[in-house]
Amino acid sequence: MLRTFVIRFSRLILKKRCSEGNAALILEQAMRKAGHSFTWMEDLRRQRATFFHETAPWIAMEIKSRQPSRYELIVLNENVADLEKDPNCVSFEAYRQIWLGLQACAADVQRVALAMIGEAASSLTNGG
Image (cartoon, rainbow, N blue to C red):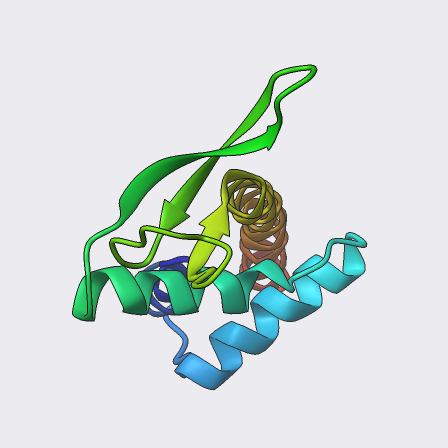
């Protein structure tokens, strides 16, 4: 969705063509420049594909320890009776990392978009 924003922003606001590959490169460069990781992107892509095309999420609670009581929310990719035998699930912490990565990327995109607007405005005032 951020890649689509970059493409449309370039086309509609800056009046420049931007391919999917260029948009992905812009996002990756913006995140690297800010020192942010983008490993979460593959997790997000995989989870979106799974839940849009293959199955619905199953919410479960994993017992981390009984004394003291510690639990963790997990999202199952299918109805699993025994997580020990079939650990087809994603921890809530993994989703938290995807969310934090997405937040950081959105801030990076905002920074890049403002810089691009500044460059375009400067180009117009300098006769370019």
